[in-house]
Image 1: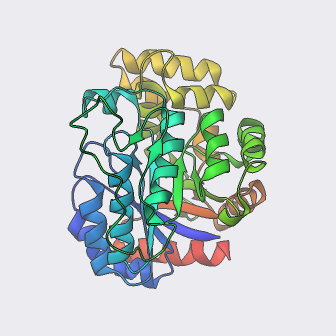
Image 2: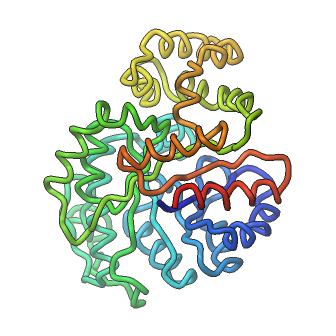
Length: 346
């Protein structure tokens, strides 16, 4: 199993990257850089590429709505070049609050757009003269749109690789099915290994049945908070605000993918109460209702034996990469956590 880590996108970025070489030496395999509505991820990933030598660099994620498919392909090819073939293109739909509120773009057809974005990106990387007739994207623009001067072009530079790995962040049944069919990797959120087969098994099987064998096995990337010790269980409480934000506040009633996931995990009552309280502005009360069982089972927080058992459960469920968030008081202690989890996962 590979070990990954997400970099914080808010504050202290240069300081964090200055320490990244240490994590690389400790065995970190891949680093994920988020893009919400803070600084863009691409400039930061380029900075990371210049400061590291071995670790893979992944966008975690670039929204499919805020850039054209061709620009996503150009960006991925450029990042792959400056990193000497270490880039992974993480894509996702984000959500309507960010896409329509911050970018001013209609949040429509996430499934169809994701498929077309992937197909266009791969045509660009193969340096094909770019023509595409999809439901959502047509290249060049068809007659009657624009000036009529658009030409089918191909990428000027030769990419380092003719296919940059694509990871899709997905949790909905149809999104996961599409990911298993088309992408090199899948990154769910709030991953509980014991529930994975019930929640996503049918979708994964349906997608893999149509999967091109050239894509290889699907890389399953699970996120988990990491702390190892006999007195660290209290650190699980740190996960409450974020879980409440996603389950309660990321979307509206009837339009919250994370709330839907909590319900599919069996927490229907808690999911409803958390959302009601969060949307009323009662964030602390909402956080208090996040089930401890959920916080525990999607974490790697506990004794060494507990963490070893959780890794085994992840591996049994199909996880191939663990994307950890190490919690410790000092940089050296966080480094030791990366070294330890690397050893346990091996």
